[in-house]
Length: 174
Ligand code: HEC
Image (cartoon, rainbow, N blue to C red):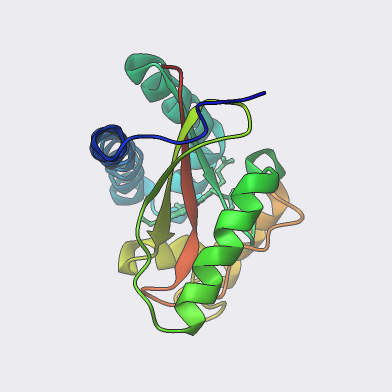
């Protein structure tokens, strides 16, 4: 039987800190690269870049920190980012909190796999809206068709600034 499904407060704080560092580093790397591409060639350059580089960049940082970094959502763009069962439950929990106007805080827990996991909400800022915003307002028809050509089942549009977009999910190897 799994015994260490609980975690001490001290350990929890340690992993909350690590999780935050890792998600910040990943966000910085992803959005830094993305904004550079946006400056160079707008969405028509940044979308294909994201298509090719988002997962490799996350994998590279995963290796560096010896973790698995994932971004997932209830409204997916890339089906490769689909939530597992626990991630879907966490997303649901955050949605319930949002409905109640409660703050969304990061979560550290030991999973059924006996590994430590970190989850945290992802919200959109204005810079995200060029590719995830309201169609014909922030998101142009041109960019949307480009996105749909790469992701025919894209659901990740029509968001507004500050909206809940999904979660970070980090699995620690130790
Ligand atoms: C230049 C267009 C562009 C911008 C700007 C952009 N994204 Fe994305 N986003 C994409 C693409 C393309 C993907 C699919 C990446 C992949 O193939 O893994 C994606 C995927 C995601 C995912 C993974 C889940 C999924 O649906 O596949 C999250 C979370 C996400 N974006 C959040 C954001 C946030 C937050 C911002 C702003 C800080 C942002 N995006 C800005 C194009 C963009």
